Image 1 (tube, rainbow, N blue to C red):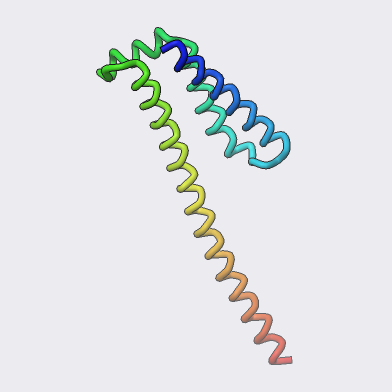
Image 2: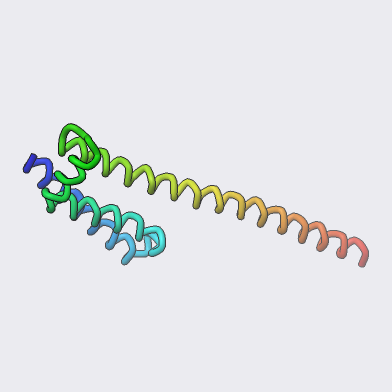
Length: 116
């Protein structure tokens, strides 16, 4: 169990560093990095506070503490992927609306040019 917690700690710290470097280099926008930072911090806290993890294991009824850690990390990433799917869907809708507005403007410009 200690080995798993140590690996989780190292991976969480690496994720934090990667996200911070990506924000610094402008590879990822700050508002999108918050989800990654919070998830990494949550995993770091859980991997370093074994009593909290064992309390969650007892409370949830999961038979094993490592399984609880994997379930929590999986749930966190599923929530993040859902959030990003919503963001992508909004961006797609915005792109369609923008393309329609551009087409209408091009039509108006073309009709003005024909009347001159």
